[in-house]
Length: 381
Image (cartoon, rainbow, N blue to C red; front, side, top):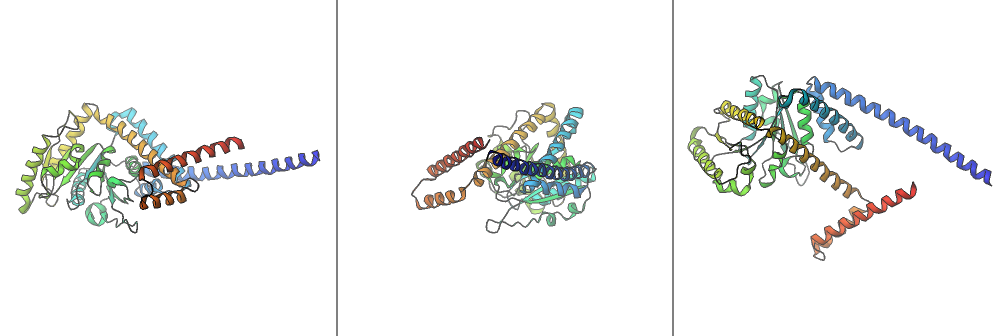
């Protein structure tokens, strides 16, 4: 009997051992394939290939488990390379990140088209990350930014990447930070992040750019509306667009109103006072002077060391974004959580339990499930 048990145990050990060896070999093969994909994309990024950049951004946007591992490997190597370049060249190695926000109809896409073609004519490479609103009903998105920027989309020194908002507040998706880093790895000098312009929630983009600009059309309301939204407090630059033709007097009046309103707002930094600039995206008037103003902002921020400190704060904000998303994903993936959540939602809608109490119950059950899973794992070991 003892011999039989020992034989059975030995057989199971050998079987499990062979499975372990097979699993290890399979993992090695998968990792080898992943490494080849990552190295191919890295090589393409370094040589500035648009196809490799597009594939890399698609990779970091995916929710596929295997591809997420590849995305992490790619981003790790890209970030290490950027760190090495910065240690050698200092802030000169850092590309310029510009965030652009404003209400619908402010002319953001036309402005980006005009500014982008102006920058490419000066020999700079421009990447545009444009976020389109997603349908609440279908989840779909038009992704029509390329149709609104016909000249820039044909420019070989420009890259336009429209992405669906997918319900993210601020119109900035979870992978926007990763896309910025990948564009920088592909040697794009200026990265412009355009948000969907939804109001109070959109200044989350300010946590990932070096300069945040608010663009508004003339006649869009008085300065109190801007104060109420709170976006002016986050702005490094305010742009009055459409200052042409019959709208020039209205644009000039809007400029004076915002200059007056800014006097009652605490500056974002003591080293920079937010300017208000009138331009015309239609005629191009004011675009060169606006770019000089943007470069002046970077120079001032570099001299007072705030440029690098902002980048460090961007990294911290990036950490918290991932942490919140991963915690939420873990919560939703917990066993039986969907059924429990459905019951709680029904209770909240019927009024039998308050939303706060329901949230506390859900969190407590999730923590208990994690504790039980940890105990089972300890017992198995």
